[in-house]
Structures are given as C-alpha cells and as structure tokens.
Amino acid sequence: MSDKQLIRGAVHHFPVATNDYHTDIEQFRDGGLLIEAGKIAATGEYQALRVLHPDASVTDYRDCLILPGFIDTHLHFPQTEIIAKYGEQLLTWLDNYTFPAEQQFSDEDYATKMADVFLTECLKNGTTTGMVYTSVHKASAEALFRAASERNMLTIAGKVCMDRHCPDWLQDTAATAQADSAALIDAWHGKGRNYYALTPRFAPTSTPAQMAALGELAQQYDDVFIQTHLSENHDEIAWVNTLYPDCEDYLAVYEKYHMVRKRAVFGHCIHLSDSEWQRMGAQGAIAAFCPTSNLFLGSGLFDMAKANQFNVPVTLATDVGGGTSFSMLKTLGEAYKICQLKQYKLSALEGLYKLTQGAAVSLGLSDKIGNFNTGSDADFVVLNPRFDTLTSLRVDDPTSAEDALFALTMLGDDRATVATWVAGKPVYQKQECSDALA
Image 1 (spheres, rainbow, N blue to C red):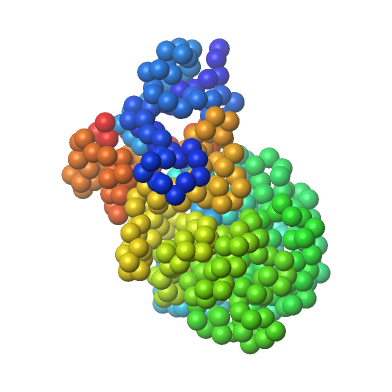
Image 2: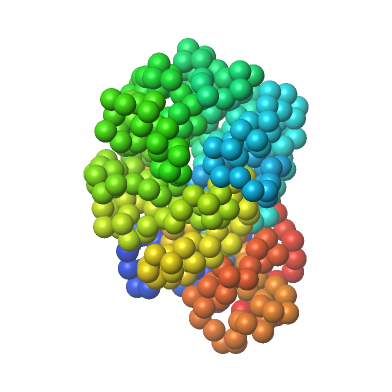
C-alpha cells in the first residue's frame, strides 16, 4: 500500500526569498500537496498530481486555504498562564507576574504539564515552529524539547539565563548558566527537529560575567541560535546604559559578547538608533516584531520602514504572555495597525511571507520549513476563511486569496483553523472544511 498522501485545497506559498510578494507567491486555487515520508514530494494543480499519483490517499480541504505552518519567533512558554494580566509596563510586569509564574517551572512535572498546554495552543492556531524562552530551570527546557519531540515539531528553545536583578530563587550563576546551556546544546541541538538558542533574558538580568560566559558558548557553537530582548522600553534602555556604561548603546552590549550575528533574534527593537539598525543589518541579526505585546505593555510602535532601510530581517511574533494571543493571524492584524500608524502599508501577502518563508529564510531554515518546495518538511495549516456568519458575509465568492487572508487577519483566530499538520501528520483537527473559499 502506498504511503503517499495528496492534500487538496487552495495552496499558497512563497518558494523563494523575496521582497516582491505579489509576483513571487505561488498559488493553486485547486491545488495539491503530495507528501511522502513526512516531506513535500510535489506541489501543483490537484488534477495533474492526481493523474500522476493515482495510488495516493487523498485528504480533501478543497474549500480552504492551505498555507505553510506559521513560524513564531519570540514567545515565552512559562508565561502561558499569565496572558492578559492587567495593567503593567515591562519592568513591573516582570516583577509582578513573570517571575512568580516562572518559579513554578522548577517542578519538572509542572513544566511537563504546561508544555503540553503551550504546544496545543500553538498548534490550534496553526503555529508549527516556535522560538521559545523557557524558564531559568534546565528541567523546563528539557520538558519543552521532550513535548515538541513527541509531536515532531521543529522547535528552537533555550534555558533563560539571569544572575541578577530578579528574585534570588530565580537566579542561576555565570558558571551554571554556561554549564547548563552547554549540556542542553549537546543533548538537543540538531537532534531530531530540535535546535538550541542561547538565551540571556536581557542585558539587565545578566552580569558581565554571565554575558561573557554565554559569549564563549556563542563562539564555541557558531551554529546555535541566540535569542534575547533589545530596546523594548525607554526605562529598560536607560537601565542598560547605567549597567553597561562602557558600551555606546544597548546593541553594543550584545556585540561585546559576540551575540550579534546571523541566527540571532532580538525581540522588539522599538527604540533603536540608526547606528544600531545599521549594525544589525550589517551583521545579519533579526528583529522580532511583537505587536500585541508592544501595544499591551505600552512599549511603543515598531518601525518597519526603518528596518527595511537598513536591511534588517523582520519576523513576526506573539510574545506570549506579554502578547495577548497565540494567534499569528491576530498578530499580523495588529502589526498592520501599527504599520498604519507609522505610515507603512503592510500588505496581507507581505505579512504571510513574514509568518512563513521570510522567517525561515531569516533563520537559515528555508530548506526545511516555511514553504512547499520539494524536500521541505510537510508542516502546514488549513484555514477556513468563512468559519462563522460574519466571515461568510465578508469573504465574497469569488475572492482573491489576498483579500481572504486580510479578512482573516482582522477577524480570525483559532476558530479559522481546520487542521494543523506537522511532518506529514495531522496533529490538530477542529472542524470540517465546508462552505468556504471555492
């Protein structure tokens, strides 16, 4: 019996790196994905693929959008249960909500339970890859990697490192941060679909000794990822200036410790100087735009035009739990609104690119995820653009995929998710796909 699967639906993806989102998108209104051994074997018109592969089993999502699985480049696994806590800005948010929540992740059983909740929320929203902060506890990173491995999700994660300016019961040291991170790299990085990210929470919560210890690892393991925060909040920036007076600006702290490079993802990047933008672009570092978090915590408005001016790759991220939704659709909708305020016209197709192929290209993973090219892992989400009465009214028939996608970014959430597939297997299924986009 053949193990080939043929997935039918309205297929849309970007096969190449591009800035020309309207020209370089590949679309098949009645399309097909041929899957073999968990990977994309072919993409094209459904009828043509069916003729070539009559023995393939067919899964029919004919009236739905089929998109590469979403890639969320900045989110906090231990903050799942504090999402939507009221009324703070960044530094008091950490003290009042984040640190007490993260204390619980010293319990491995608790971390394991919450990893299941966290990944289920990701999958029900169509997110198949996350770049994730765990807690300071080594066991929390292990729990997340185990849970992601059980689902065969491509996951980038790291143990948070912080040895000052947080409660004593949530601190590691320079030595333990380095030792635990190295052990996790050896155990998980490049094993299955797991990748490790060195994770200093942000410069204020790491001493120079800890930053130096992590910088040594960054040089020793030049293929690991790096994730941290940069220029999210004015008070944060002023604090960094007092803690690292020898550095000309916030980015220079990370440069001093060899952390600004390709595969380094800096969350927020709201209040950067032109010099910082220029240096990020020159070194291939990535800015993770976290719109719902930036609005919720009152941090500021990201400047997409400035990032483009200095050739800084921009990805989109939920930043749960400062961010207010696991939905990358809602995240894209809020990104559109911020860009409106900054006089930047963010199209639905540019947004789709940043959720999929653009993120994969920036992370150096476009041979594996973000697209439906032959040989890529078969990670994808199936969306019903008419999931309720309002969206059925809004999405005309016939309509363009771009218009349907834009409507989903304004009106959609996990209710639009019909199914999420990871490595050729359905790992989340919600509803039948009917009365949707023909």
